[in-house]
Picture (cartoon, rainbow over the protein chains, first blue to last red):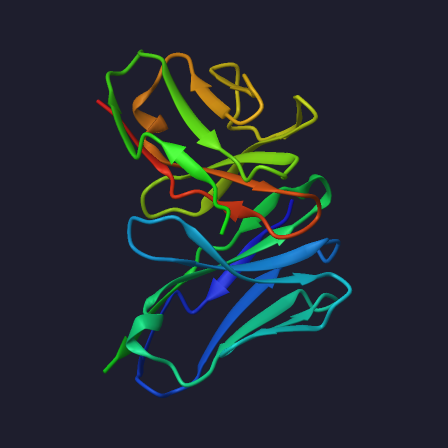
Length: 111
Length: 112
């Protein structure tokens, strides 16, 4: 059974600092990995999708890496802003399209 | 930009009552999903649906749950007899295949 873990559970940084969010998974037989942002009481906004054959994906200030063999993905957010404060979730996609989610990292960017 | 929509945004019901949560997936998507998130816990997969039938369901998705695509645009989740532990945020999602899943804003279900 796939288990997805995100460490740390919470992170507080001053504005302008780069953010590094970690995600690990136990079963490397994945199809893809997706990073989401969730604001309090809101839905999930997709940030990046990395296919299992890819090592990296970039969108603006966001960069996500994937090391399938070691069961790890990292989301980098450059030059953080207060508006980046949210919970970031990673989810691993398996056969059948089912996503298994981590518990999230709650990020606070202080002005 | 196309988006997944869900109604209602908040549903309050009495234990034992039936509820139907509604979703309109993105129009050219073929795969539909329901997930739930109990307050303070992880998002959990409930069911996936493709070609008018269930593709996969989790252990949570027991006989009290059912899904339906009643027409060309809606996708519904029915809970026949709600329990207190069904209180959660329910998310609908859709995609076109093995690619990015797009989530709706969620329906907060409160069972009293």
